[in-house]
Amino acid sequence: MRNSISWVLWLITTMAILLATRHPIYLVILLSELLLVGNKIAKYQGISSWAVNNLRFLMTMVLLSTVINAFFTHVGSTIVFRLPENWVLIGGNITLESIIYGLINGLVIGSMYITFNITNLALNTKQITGLIPRAFHPIAMTVTVALTFFPSIQQRAREIKEAQMIRGNPMKHISDWLPLFVPLLVTSLENAFQLSESMTARGFHTKYQPHRQEYALMGLIIATFVIFSAWLLRLYNYPKTTSIILYAIGAFLLIAILYKTSQRTQITRYHQETWGRKDILPSVLLGLIIIGWVMLRIVEQGPDLAYTPYPTFSLPSIQFAGILLSLVPLLPILFIDHD
Image (cartoon, rainbow, N blue to C red; front, side):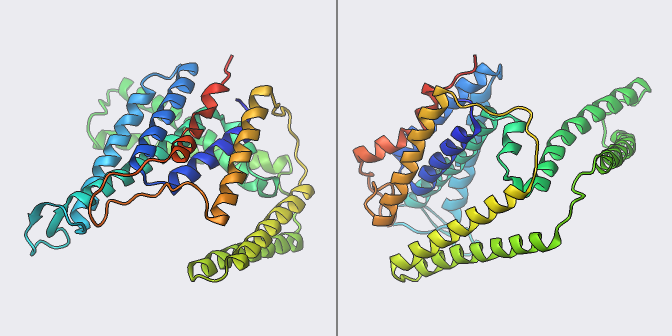
C-alpha cells in the first residue's frame, strides 16, 4: 500500500469514524490499531521510539482534557469532591461524569493526531504535494518550498552554531544565541531572493488569466455557500431531501470547477505513481466503506457509535457492527509493502 490515493481514503475513513464515535471501547480498539499500523511503518523506515513518543503525547492530551473538563464542566450526578463555590470558573462539584467525558475527548484528540502522524509517515513530501489539485498549483509550489525551506534553515543554524562555538561562544545563555539570528536571517533572505530570481527566469506563473481566475473563484464561493446552506438547513430541521439536493449540487460544482481549472493548467510529472495489487484492493474496500457509511448516515440506519456518561454514569453497550467498523483502520497492516 504505497499509493497516495489509498492512504487518503484510509485517512478519510479513519477520521470519519473517530469524529462519529465517543464510545470508549471502540476508541481503545481504534487507538490500538493505529499504534500497530504506525509502529510497523516506523520500523520499516528505521524510526525508533515512534510508539513511545506518540503514547507520551496521547497521555498528555488525555490528562489535559480530563482536568480541563472536570474543573470547568460541573455537570453530572456522581460527585467525586467539591471545590469552594467562590472559586471563579472552577468552583463547584467535580463529577465522575465530567472526568470520564474529558478522558474520552482526550482519546479522540490523541487518536486524530496519531492518524495524521501515520499518514505523514506513509507519504513523502512529493506525494503530499501531488495530492493538491492542479488548479491550486501556486499553493503546491508554496508548500513544497516551505517543506524544503525549514530543513535548510535548521542545517544552516547548526553550521552557524558550530562556527560560534569554535570562536569561543559557549551558547549556554539566551544572550549567547543573539549572534546566531543575524547571519541566519541574512542567509534566509539571500536564499529567498535567489529562489525568486530562479523561478522568474524559468517563467513560473507568467501566464496570467485574470478573468478565468475570477470566474473560478466565484464558482468556488458559490459552491461553498450551497454546501453551507445545506448544513444550516439541516440544523434547523428542514426536510432532509432539500439538504441532500443542496449537498449534491455543491459537490458537483466544486468537482466541476476544480476539474475545468485543472485542465487549463499544464504541468509535467516526471515520476508517475503506480497502482499495484496492494493499492487497488484496499482502495476499493475503503471506497465502498465510505459510500456505505454515507448512505447509512443519510437513511439514519448506521451503527450507534455515540456514548455519553451524562447525566449519570452507566456502562456503554457494545454492538457487533460498531466493533466491525472500528476494525477498519487496521486494513493497511495487511497491505503495507516497503520492500
